[in-house]
Image (tube, rainbow, N blue to C red):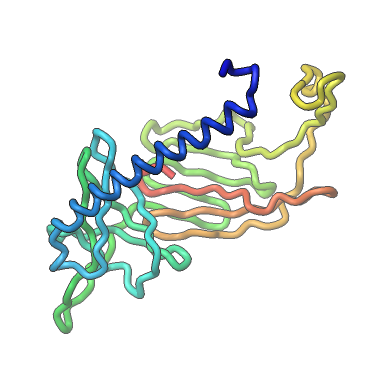
Length: 239
């Protein structure tokens, strides 16, 4: 079928074929994973998790797993090295290093001697307050209207924003095309005054050694934007 001559039929048939291919591939991957997992020794770990890296370079990532631990200081790798952890609303956030095309086995201490003190988690430099969010790389300051008024690069020791410039602005422009309303964006939309909703609430939604962040709520006469959040991770780990 030539695309364009029967677009609907092309998409319907392609979806069925791709679902069959994806199903076969997932079955093969699951079978391979089952064989691999059966040969992993987890005897020294409680609640073990095998974190796999499918990419061809070493990775340090944040991994969110179900279940919240009463203590976050007892997560370790299979070699005994401590794993940094943070509670996250019924789940646990872990910082995991995985080798290229490999995996890391992590879990909790199987046993802990009586009287043994839990190891304190290291300071990652992640901080959050009413209007400041920072780690070892960046310091971000928020204005009272919810915009970002300052981003300071601690590594390069320089300001990222121009003087008096604002970032993270939420604004709406009036879009009334002269023709083809479904896809036209006329050049003069920039000449229309932008609508800026008002910030009505800001609350901290995450605070810990691995991730910190705000949730901000903006309001305007005809709408409310309720879940616009700004998050920052420790070090260079991506969001």
